Length: 323
Image 1 (spheres, rainbow, N blue to C red):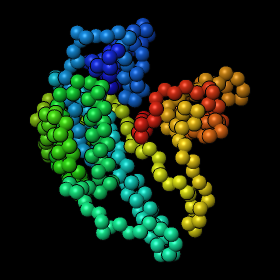
Image 2: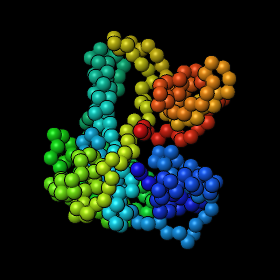
Image 3: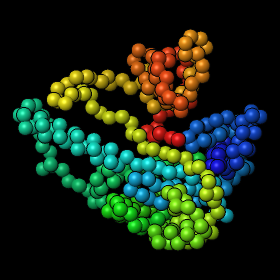
């Protein structure tokens, strides 16, 4: 079970605590929920004398999924997550946009003029689908730096995958970006990671591979049945304002306004409906409409027609889906 991130009233990260300890603090009124994913509590009093235990982040970069774990100085895994990238979705969107643009040019209608003659790629350029893997990994590294006392990073450098070309193109870029953070960075090989995992008799998983990275991976302690936080890069929507049919004729137009009544599609909300056919308590992700009639996606299904007046925001959408 993942440990819980803890912060004091000044948003200073403290040592992570066991979920049972977090429940006791919440029940006693000494803390409140600061964030649902990853679960973080904030104390209701300042702790200037408390010093957070330094943790080390370990990553196993992959073409589709990246494993991330946080270990303490005793090489015990306190937190595990698996980050699913959306590189294929980005590539598909770019190809769709290119097809529409070329169609407009072939029909000799109004279009954006070609701009490849005045474009230059900077050193270290990566395709958007590969650059996305670097940026999402760094996004979570920066989040962990704000939530806990991070003192170092260990990352796997090479691994034999079917998508080895994509991994090799991004691992060097990821290593350079990690060095720019100022944190001490250590790297290991895929062979060493597999040797450590097989020696410790751990099953194969993205987060377990991340825990076994490097020289210290041979002594790491973890619970194989531990359920990591599943993080999926979902994006922040798209910029297409006009939808088309299969004949590329416009059929619908989007509004520029994304927020309605203080809510945005993808926010995690709690709805307390006190009367009517849909009376009950619903918790999940909201689909907003300008009319104020929202849909809520819960773990049991989708509930339609919930008024915004019954909704309370739990966590703003941040471009990721969690499970």
